[in-house]
Length: 247
Length: 247
DNA sequence: CGACCGATTGAATGACATCAAACTAGGTGG
DNA sequence: CCACCTAGTTTGATGTCATTCAATCGGTCG
Image 1 (cartoon, rainbow over the protein chains, first blue to last red):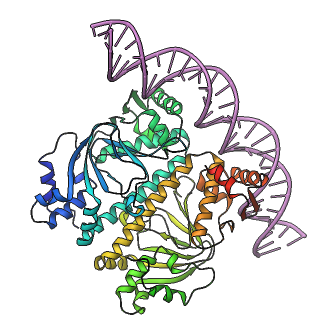
Image 2: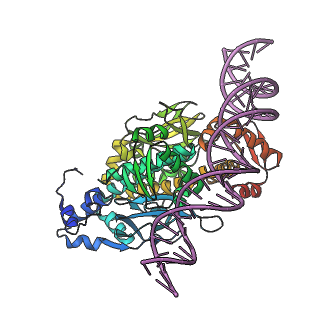
Image 3: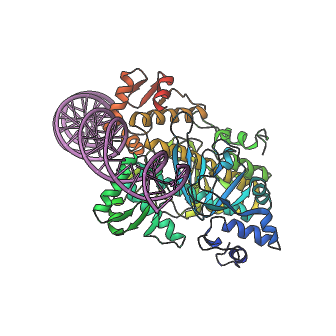
């Protein structure tokens, strides 16, 4: 439980570590990997539990809405979008996921995924299969503890982000950009200069705004010298102003 | 794990059961109570774990935003609202809670509550203290299993409801009413005739709409013979039409 | 009965969507 | 290598819908 536990797995992970990948200790699966790895004597064991570092191409689908729950995923590098409601109405983007984040925990209870997950760029993932999940849960209380903590964290995070949808358009976009900035910073990536891996259309869909509105807002923020926007490259010139807009 | 487990706790709970209370087997704490109770030989033991049937008055606060996490609550009867952001901006209603539902799970990870919970009417609750939660977790894997399932369920539920905020106003209200209807039905309460325990202002705040808009929409739905609205009493006259509006 | 809070209704303003069109970047094939 | 093509993006004009401001109504409680 200590935060200063022997970084057993961390080292193991890092021997394959490439520059654009998030380190294991910044990964939401870290607690889980650590617990699983500490229990088993040799590190080879871990590879049987967590399938590590599969690569996926841009546009690849991790799982589809409705598909039975089979695994949870941790993002090692790259980014993904969740979307749902493809049938009668146009699909809606419900979330963006970046390196270090866990996907699929909400399917544990339902038994099936309630949204589809698509890679926004070439990415790599770790995968924890459902049967392994169950086994670990029965054997290790500490593992379940980790799972509970992660779920609880996701729940409170989602509650916060759910609120921005009721705000005025420029607040929504500002909040969105600040959220991205914070998440990049947590991953020890540049927080004020970054590339958007998603289209304006995806952003609009996610924020519940028209593509045109997103475009206009970017132009407006550019005009106000709050942002520097070049295609999908964003530089936050005036973070204070952006925070003021987001309130 | 079987759904047909001996209803040990159910009976125990019911001996104090009053007409407006949700039965134990419809309570989100049920799994937890069942697990905790089955483990201990006598039922007296359960009362040491879960403090049952405290009553609270309308306007009473279970906990305040920012307060350290000390317990999770199950609603036995009545209803509550969650609200947050009281400082610089006007408070926002983030959720409504009805009998059988669990409150506070998202504070496990954060260690403190991120919103305040207020009783909308005279209500009664069961309370599971944090230290008991920890103890149970360490002792009983099945308990953690229950917690994980509940958390996962809450997560996917929240994802769905977060989407309605992007819809057009009458869709939002229709979806809200249908959601209430479903939740009442799950509690074996009348699903098409019910009393709103929250004000129009709370509804508007929750849906991100002005009070006046809510009022107008109610009048409009009344006009269209979809609803019968008398103050806070609602009767759904045409469920199909309401579903069509909600899409 | 009067005061107050919640709810309703109307009119004017404003924000965002929609429609329509031009533009750009990135990729493809000649 | 360039012309072309397409998907993504930007910009303008117009309409719709929800907010805001303002006034009134109704119910509840002292």
